[in-house]
Amino acid sequence: MSLTAKQGASIELIEAGNHHGVCVAVIDLGTQYNETFNKQQPKVMITWELIDFPITDEHGEPKGYRLISKEYTASLSEKANLYADLVSWRGRDFTPVELEGFNIKKILNANCLVNVIHVTKNKNTYANVSAVAKLPKGMTPKSPTYQLLYDMDEDVAAIPEGVPDWIKDKIKKSLEWVALTNPQDSDEPAPTDADADEDFIPF
Image 1: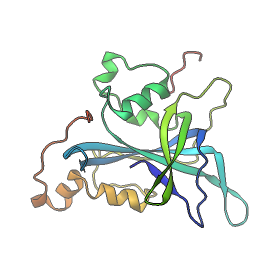
Image 2 (image 1 turned 180 degrees about the horizontal axis):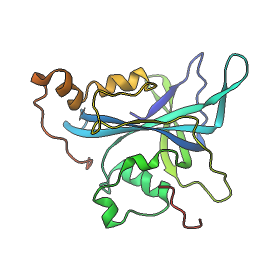
Image 3 (image 1 turned 30 degrees about the vertical axis):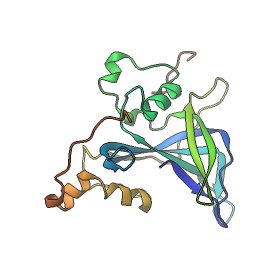
Image 4 (image 1 turned 180 degrees about the vertical axis):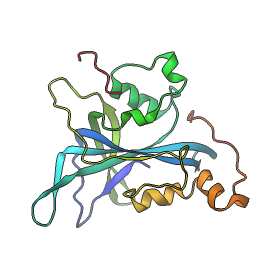
């Protein structure tokens, strides 16, 4: 699930196309059941502020930017969407050493281009992240207005303030959260992989 904005009376759909983004959140979703592949997989949610879409409060004062998110399987398999987007974002491939264990936290605050597409499903239209790319030369990097990081390896119970309820609901379906809150219900199989300057690298 990579949608973030649903067309409706109060929320205008984010325009399709390439937009300047800044990574503001990396959220560990834990081990989630994938109905399509009928297996458990480690998942992560990445969120960007879109600099092209500033928002204001009721008094017309700036209050940040529109957000868009994408859910990934936490894998650097060459078939994984996370691998493809990170390679495009970095502007180069991973080294063998990096592939042994790349810390996804490094992408926090990193700028990029976020490619947004519109997808219609069940009569609703959504703005989805199709791809992520390195910020082109000549575009000025921006600083994020806030930062969110949630890593289950540090503390499963410590979901930070500011994580939206719909993401909290996903976290609470993970094997890790179930093991924390209902240990007797946590006997599930282990997660599997995803196989279902001029040279500046942002992370």
